[in-house]
Structures are given as C-alpha cells and as structure tokens.
View 1 (cartoon, rainbow, N blue to C red):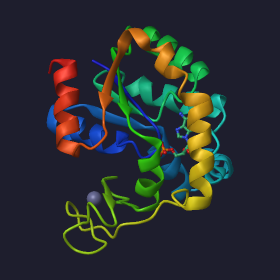
View 2: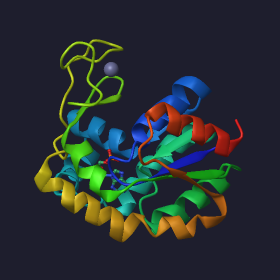
View 3: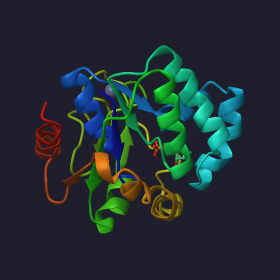
View 4: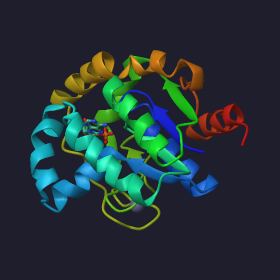
Length: 211
Ligand code: AMP
Ligand code: ZN
C-alpha cells in the first residue's frame, strides 16, 4: 500500500509519516529531505535546488520528478510520500511512474488544520538532521535542551523555517498544492487535526486506513 501525506507546511506530515514508518513498517519518501541531503552533499541537484528552496518556491518538476523516479527504481511499495506530489503535474506523473512499476497510490491522508496555527509551529520547529524527527521549542521540547531524544544529535533550525520565508511557502501551498485535494477526492481521507495530540491524530489515521 502506498500513501500520500497531504497538508500545509507545519501540518504534521513529517511527524505522522515517521509514526507510520516506525510503527507500521512503511518507508518514508520525503522530497524535502532528499533535497536537503543533496544540498549538504553539494551535489548538482542540491546546488540547483537550493535557490528555489530558500525562496519558498517549488523546485521545478523536471528535477523533482527525476529524483523521485530514481527512488522508485529501487522501492515502489509500502511508501509514505511526504511533500510529493505538490502540484497537479507531479500528481499525474506519480500515477504514471507507479503504474510503470505495477503499483499505485492507494490513499491520500489530508491533514486539515487551521492556517493560524501553522506559522507559530514552523517558526518554533527544531529538527534532528539524523532521524528527521521534529520538535517544538515550547510545546514539544526534547528531554535535553537542543538534543534529539532518539539519537543525541544536536537539533537544527531549517534555513527556510524563518518568518520571512514562511508566508511564501504557505502561499505556494495554497496556490499549487491545495488543488490536489480535489484531484485526489476519490482516495482522500480527511483528518481533522485541530486541537489534537500527535498520538490522537495517528490513531485517526490508522482508523481511516483500517490498519
Ligand atoms: P519540505 O521539507 O517538504 O517542507 O520541503 C522543503 C522545500 O523543498 C519546499 O519548500 C520546496 O522548495 C522543496 N520541495 C520539496 N518537495 C518538493 C516538490 N514535490 N516539488 C517541488 N519542490 C519541493
Ligand atoms: Zn534524531
């Protein structure tokens, strides 16, 4: 079964993807993480993608789709797609790529959350560069200040998690990614994520998938 986590930046896609991977054996495909890995390794894709990411814009489809295609050559089932597709063109391309591997995207989990919460969450986010888990500077602090609970790596602030970039990222989401809700209406599971703990949301996701 392949699943897409759909939602605005800061809606909890990464956290819920991590739960599905560690508790249900899925594998995480986060295009944002793949781009950040390419940037830190200074690959050609990384150097090229950096300018778009720092501006809060989408990296052009050609490069993004190619990166996903290469991933799918090794692995195309039991995946959690996190942050891809982000527009209709990518969604059409993903259906084709999976069909080429005799697979499909079975369900789309849409984490529905009020816009007002997102900015506050993003600008307070700390991430572990090793296991990619995210924390909140005030509400979900690590046990030891600035250190990941799971692997003791010092936590970081993403370059694009600063206030100046967040509004552009939300605008990009509203203009280009939100239309996917309609595109995927037949496979969509909408999860109301307001005023719920990550564990409650996870339970709702499992119920909606019947797993
Ligand atoms: P994320 O970690 O998912 O928030 O992604 C961080 C940034 O990487 C985004 O703001 C985009 O600039 C870029 N990015 C990630 N996924 C995609 C995608 N599917 N298409 C284009 N750009 C992407
Ligand atoms: Zn960690």
